[in-house]
Image (tube, rainbow, N blue to C red; front, side, top):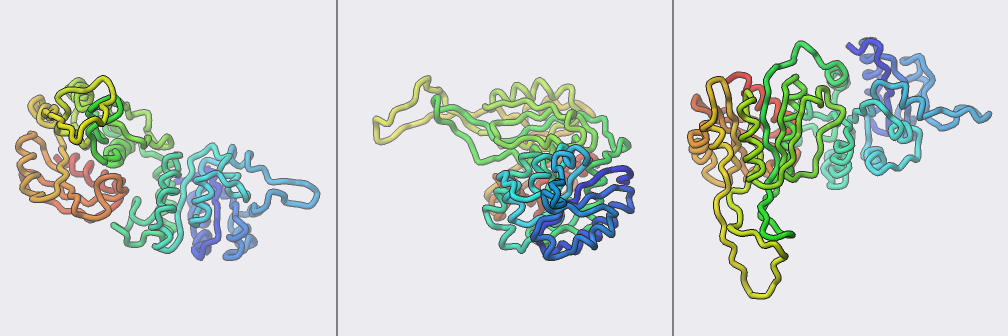
Length: 402
């Protein structure tokens, strides 16, 4: 329930603006107090009179409410609110939010907001898929905003429904879960998670690495924390950050490393005190035999690098595994996916393997989506393509069944 919660509801110029009425009714039914802030374009789709009748509050749209100089304080709204929800949120407003273009009351309120911000995008699929929109959404996520869209927590997989605003009842449910983490769901487990790539230095400015963004590993860490688990997150060199608004964020202890050697040492040290390990990192399999202490100059027509194997972290932890501990390993394959994954399952002494393939467009490295299969000694489970936040839930659900 949202009893006593103060919600600022931002409405923008989308055809889905009429659904804001259903959102208001649902929030008030759960005991929330709602203050609407609407853009000038939003008023073209729904009237402030309708919204005011539902909230029993004047709708805020302009900086000045009267000609006598009385003004609406976006700063006061930012302090008053327990959460800000922008639904529907157009591509234009997302772009302004991502770049700090404060040309209306809604954006200035957003920039002053002290409470968590939730965004429900609403646009056609082409606009949603455009690189600019995706870049802006990713930037909003990096600011700690939570994006609510079909497939991000409740409905479709893949591109089905993407761009369309999530249904009002699902948006309200999302807010309820985010603002009221259930103590009853706390799990006492301690999970070790590796994430991102490793960089193996060639010289001071060059390295051997891969395209891993760390998104899957970070999604797993946040999902574990959301369920009340303690997490040791060993992260390779990545640009993403943990969501500071995440419930139980303090349960995640992050250790930053660069090379396989550093990740190996951190994992070996942490694993004995953990109940489970999820080895999601894309660790380099080889590193240079020698690392130059100065930049290698281009003096010849070719350069021969001699490589030697790095530590097999999963196999090392598999040998250390004691009764009651569990290991989840990942296999990213380009061919003979299932056969290669089954070999890894045995070699790593893992409880199950999460298999994903580079042959599925829009998944794996740097993507927000993934499509996995889970292989264990008892069989194989295939899952639909979906956001990595949802994939993380599937993986943790499977771990809890082991």
